[in-house]
Image (cartoon, rainbow, N blue to C red; front, side, top):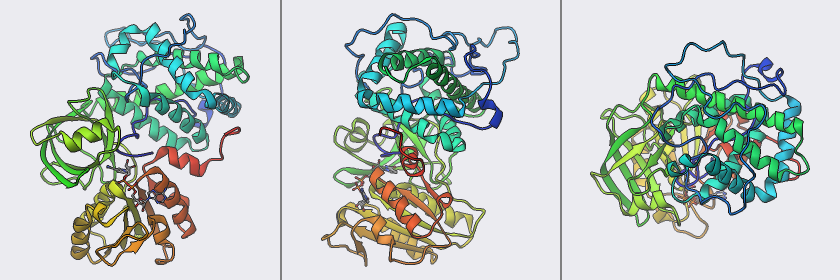
Amino acid sequence: MTTMSENRDIPVSGGRPDGTGDQWSAGAGRPLPPPASGSQDRSASQPPAASGPASGPSREAPPDPGTTPGLPPAGGTRAVTDPPPVPVPPVTGPTGADVELIRRTLAEIQPVADKVTGHFYALLFLRNPELRDLFPAAMDTQRDRLFGALLTAARHAGDPAALTAYLSDLGRGHRKYGTRAEHYPAVGECLIGALTRYAHHTWSPAAETAWVRAYTLISQIMIDAAAEDEQRSPAWWQAEIVSHELRTPDTVVLRLRPDKPYPFRAGQYTSVETPWWPRVWRHYSFAGAPSADGTLTFHVKAVPAGWVSGALVHRARPGDVLRLGPPAGNMIVDHSTDNGLLCLGGGTGIAPIKALVEDVAEYGRRRLVDVFYGARTDQDLYDLETMLRLERTHPWLSVHPVVGDGCPVRAAGLTGQVPDAILGAGSWTGYDGYVSGPPGMIRSGVHALRRAGIPPDRIRHDSFETISDLQAPALAGE
Ligand SMILES: NC(=O)C1=CN([C@@H]2O[C@H](COP(=O)(O)OP(=O)(O)OC[C@H]3O[C@@H](n4cnc5c(N)ncnc54)[C@H](O)[C@@H]3O)[C@@H](O)[C@H]2O)C=CC1
C-alpha cells in the first residue's frame, strides 16, 4: 500500500470481499437491509471515505438527489435505544457475474476517474451538507484515494480473505473519524449516483444491482469490524512527543508516549493526525516492537507537499500531542515456522523491518534474518548505526546496506537497488520474504523474492494496492 508516510490512508472502497461461499448468491435486486450493527462512536464526525485531504466539490451540477433502489435509506440504522430489531437476513454479496460487471464499470470510468470522484463528493455534500465540515478543508488527494481503493477492491475479487482483512482494518480505522453506521448508506447512494452518471456504456440494472450488493457487503464488514472493536479499544489515542531526533535534514525519529496502553504487533502501522492539520491522517509504521515502557517510535521523512510529514519533521517538538488511530496491517512475523526472514527495507521503509528484527529477538527462537537496507546515498541510511548495533548483538542477524549506483558506502555495502541486491547474494529458499518501502520497490522487491524461489504465500508487505497489481490480472481496458 503505497507510500506509508503520505499516501497510504485509504478510504472506503468498493469491491468483493468474501468469507462464506453462499453469502454471494441470493438476493439480487431486492432491497438490502440496513447495516446490522454499528453502535459506533456517537460523536458526529467523518463518514466513510473521509480519511484524507481532498478538494471541494466538483463544479459540475450534480443530478437531483434521489435514492438508489436497493440501498437502504440514509439514517436507517437503528439507534441504541430502539426496540430489538427484526432478525436481519444475511448480507448478500456480489456473484461472479457481478464481479465482472463491476470490473467493466471500473474500466470504463478509469479515464474520467477524477470527474467521477469529484461528482461523488458533490453529491455527498449536496445531499448531506452537514457532512462537509467534517472533512478536511482541502480534498485533492482524497479523489485519487477513493478511486484507487475501488480498483483495489475490484481487483481483489480473487482474494476475499485479504480483502475482508483490509475492510475490517478500514472499518476499525474509520472509528477515529466518528463514522457512524448510518453514514454508510449515504455514501453508497452517492457512489451509485456518480457511477450512473459516468459509466455510460457499462451501466445497466444488472450493474447497479452488482454495485449495490458489493457496497452493502463492504459497508457491513466495515461496520461489524468497527462495532466489535468498540467493545475493546478506544477510537483513538492521544500521544505526547517525548523525543524528536532529526537524523537527516528531512528525516526524523519520533518517540511518543500514548495516554493509554497501545497494543500492537511488530510490523504493523497506524494513522497519525497532527494538531496543525486537523482531520488529515497519515500512516506510519511502528519502528520497533512493543516496548516495556509503552512508548512508540516512528520514522518520518518530509516529502514535497506532505502536510503531515512536513509538520512532523519541521514543526513538531517534544510536548506536542498527536492523535493515533488503531494499529493495522499484517506484515507480522509468522512464529509458527523456523524459516529465515529475508527483509527488504527501502528508505524509511526500514522502520517496520527493525520492528520485525526486534520481534524475532524477543521471541527467543534463533532464526536467520537478513536485512537489505537501501537508500539513495550513504547519508540517507539514517538508521544504519542502529541496525548494525542489532547485528552485533544478534549473531543470527545480517545487515546489508545498499546505496544507489556510484555512491560510496560506509559499511561493506552493495550498490544498486535493493531488489537487485538480493539476487545473487545467496540462496533464499527456506526464507520468508518481507518488503517495506516505496511502492516501486515493493513491486520489484516482491518479483525479486519470487525469482529467488520464495513462494507468494511466504511474502509479506503492507501495500494492499501493490499486491493486487502483482496477484491479479489487470482489468480489461487498463
Ligand atoms: N515511514 C514509515 O513508517 C514507512 C514508510 N514507508 C514508505 O517508504 C518510502 C520511503 O521513501 P524514501 O525514504 O524516500 O525512499 P527512496 O525513494 O529513497 O527509496 C529507498 C530505496 O528503495 C529502493 N527503491 C526505490 N524505488 C525503487 C524502485 N522503483 N525499484 C526498486 N527499488 C527501489 C532503492 O534501493 C532506494 O534507494 C515512502 O514511500 C514511505 O511511504 C514504508 C513503510 C514504513
